[in-house]
Image 1 (spheres, rainbow, N blue to C red):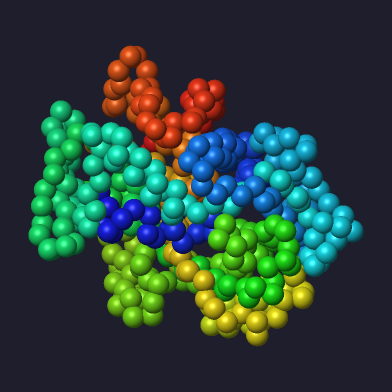
Image 2 (tube, rainbow, N blue to C red; image 1 turned 120 degrees about the vertical axis):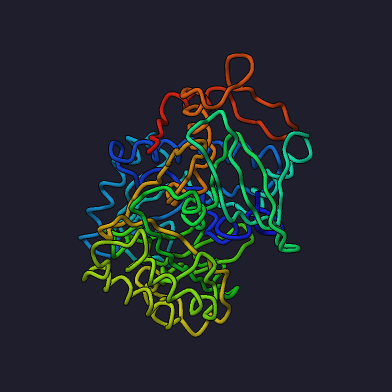
Length: 426
């Protein structure tokens, strides 16, 4: 069920389009996400090549602009190798070696990772949906259908009921289900709340904005450039230099607080400000402590300034690309919204949450490994549901549907997901 006219109109089409390598994940603490990124890269590469759509293996440079942030690069290099990258796919460079491959980049040290690519996730998500619709009569996608309530019973032999609103005519309809997966992105917590589950979560929304570079900068670098985040204790990246599959060079994103999963404009944010404030401070799932501690104040102030002032955002990128000028950036890119889950103490939850309640699986806080890891995580979730006896398949195993250009995934990749990606249900 999709509330928009077609799939992937929000986060899937509004992100940076990167297929990431797993060097930013701790190999023990973040093992599941590291493996999801490692195998996800190959899944997407296979799919894009089979369907002749762009998969630009352009690599990425992660730069440290001072000695302190260079210490983090050393960890990332070690993590990348332990997470499955080969020595010829990732290496540490000093500033002179960086100059040889990217003359316009200024830094103290950098990691060069060749196993990093660019795609258009909106395009490939819609293609994936069309493949199912065109090749499998059992699959249907109900568009313009907004879920407004979910009713379930502990007796799993009884079907659940979805109440949904047809956005074309505002009629409220019902549909029965045996099992439901709530994978509604930034709206997932709102959907889960309709089931009256007790929990201690709240969501915060952050708008990421971009500026498109003029064509005079098209040859400035050969690859996207990231920097070590200033506020690395929070789940956000600093603005970076992005090369997209459409040829655009962009700067972004920031992480400016907004009050709705669809708060792309000031009017929408103003409308949602007081309802969101009530939820955080007085509502059923209110938090016990203020999230506005000193570090959060500093983050919000920095990101808000990047939103208000184009010059300030460009200045953050000029630290490693000193030749760019703010006056040259006159066109805004497509902004996107990210939802982050916080607990009752106002602390950010760093990992995705898979909450199984009755016959509904809710997927919350799925930000990292993001779109890169969706195929491995999807397989891992299905394997888990099969092992628990919730889903059943023919032939005593996972049934691989032979759809045209849909399954270029070899059995070894899928078996790796089964062995190495153990997701936990809450």
